[in-house]
Length: 150
Image 1 (tube, one colour):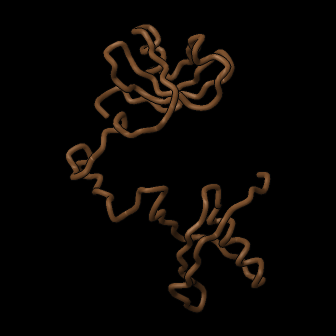
Image 2 (image 1 turned 135 degrees about the vertical axis):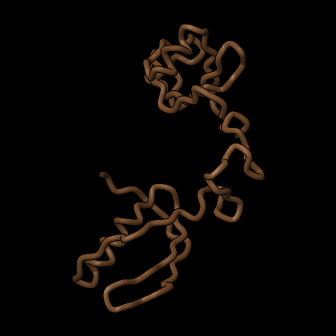
């Protein structure tokens, strides 16, 4: 992979033993924590790798407002995916296109979407959010689909 600029906002060593250490890290998007572990090992002339990796937050979401996965749709504070403001273009699709999308097949982008780049939200004829797609020229490739209640 090509190197990218990252930011480390905080690093704290939490635990040190003979052959292990535990640290916490606050970093920018694009940071490969496993690569940091590898690089730390290289600095001390010792192989180093991650035994465990826990993401504690991303953007405005963190573990303090996380819920158990035992019953996610009824968890306190659950926000259906289609209610999260993703600030994406909308691809309104017909029933034929919806079937293609839900089966992972590409569709032709509408004229409004063609030429844009990035992600779009798929909305079916009943105004239901059914997934996310990536625009590639005249084509939209479904990347994440939600065939049932989300």
